Image 1 (cartoon, rainbow, N blue to C red):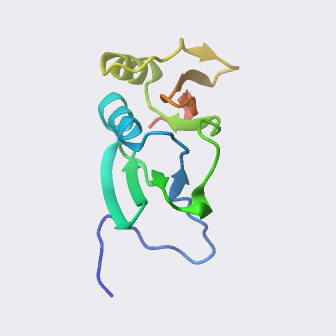
Image 2 (image 1 turned 60 degrees about the horizontal axis):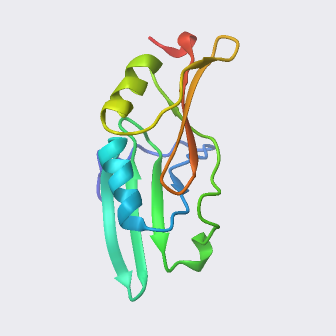
Length: 138
């Protein structure tokens, strides 16, 4: 067994969410959106078999990644049907401005009773929201 510093140990009794499949129609277009517009880190872009492609991307600072795939029946979903993934941020105005500066279209910040949200979509219509909870900021 090897030590991988980027992968923390899994404590007994925990269920760590580490990968969310995102259904897209064009992996290259989606990869460009997530890396260039949102600043996600490209972790993996492999073609392990004929007709199969797996791209894994991680939001800055996140322990959970997304995957864009083709050729894997077990991850096949209708394109653009993923709804409401949340990216929790320390400063929603700053995060929103940074995404807009990178070319993403992000809606206005909305105050929903002390929790703040700003919505956006990827090119296929999968929806995301920036979320700010002031009490979680240290």
